[in-house]
Length: 257
Length: 101
Image (cartoon, rainbow over all chains, first blue to last red; front, top):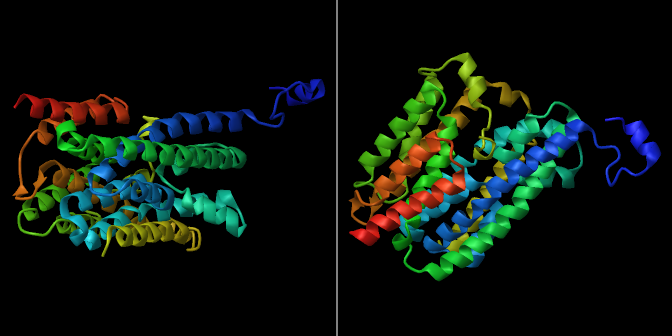
């Protein structure tokens, strides 16, 4: 692209200074962002099915804005109700812990400025981190982060509202298989993380722990107990390698598959 | 605790974790144990949530139409079918089995 000539002609639409790298980053943002935003519909419908009202579903998407944590919160509330509130909060928070690591990676791209860093913090999720860190230059990393964050924030909140309104009309959700859809949603979030032996072993171990404890512990607690498998394997690095540590730290959203 | 309390406490905590990443020293991200724990924690929670959501019931543990639906979802994810399509397919399988039985 010969920007000098294009600028001279002065007919190059809105962004005469946009480099090919930045254009590519924005294209990735749309591809990932639109795909991911679409499943806000399933979140909205499941939240209402779990007993939340439309407003509560929307506040979760506006304020929490982290798909895994949101699905976890409504999943635990669906089985345990408000009595499982503590476990629901703990599940959502533990599942959100990975966002702290993403923020560490994204922070250097964002630069100074409190308001900018607050907004960037809010938009630090799997997808904005994945798209931005995949770009070759600082300006394209920035473009990838902000575009992906903005597209998903707007899209996720609109589709949450839409899903919640649809869920509100459905009534009995098991008739429509929405409970099975929730299980499939967790499977979809887990799937891209199962590329190494270590996480596969942890996933199987956690599943067994949860299944064994379900009949004996109150709702929500089996999920928390299962995290002990991750702590045990993580601290001892059983079945792990130095290479796998680095590979596993990479976020891998469904939208990019 | 009301549903609103649960939503607001959890949302603020999740947001605080994101913002914490902008304030703690970047060297933390380089620590393999920290990165590994964060990843495995995510894996263990998601795996446990799949089990609870697939088999959970008022009586504790129950096998029903959700299991074949999740099996179909696993097959479709392995074929790299897009997320939203898999979710809809899983719902349809469970709904179909329930309508027929």
